[in-house]
Image (cartoon, rainbow, N blue to C red; front, top):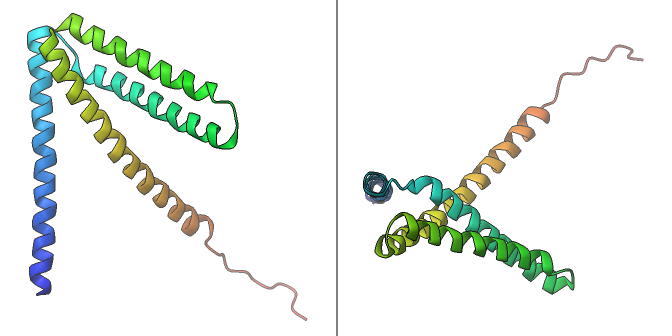
Length: 152
């Protein structure tokens, strides 16, 4: 029974990895198609989209925290507006470089890529923080032998 459950876990992990690789392959092929047809750099504009989403989400969080504590909500609003302006500018740039159908498709794919990068980036950040904590704990917290020189 234990072997069957371990086998099932391994199959699930392989299936998830295969789906991730398939999605990455499709995105790379889509980016190559856009570069060939429209000279549009998908990955550079995806990073701009990620920055816009992070500004908007960060501004929303800042606004909510300031509203709860009675602080200054203007900073959060400015961040959200900046993210929105970047987002609208990127959509206009995409429509200008391609056409309306491709622009809608590209924007939807870029939002998905930005969400996936944010999600997996947060997981990687948590893992890195945990490993750093363990390194500090074991490396800096290690004891050294103490030799007593004057024993009475």
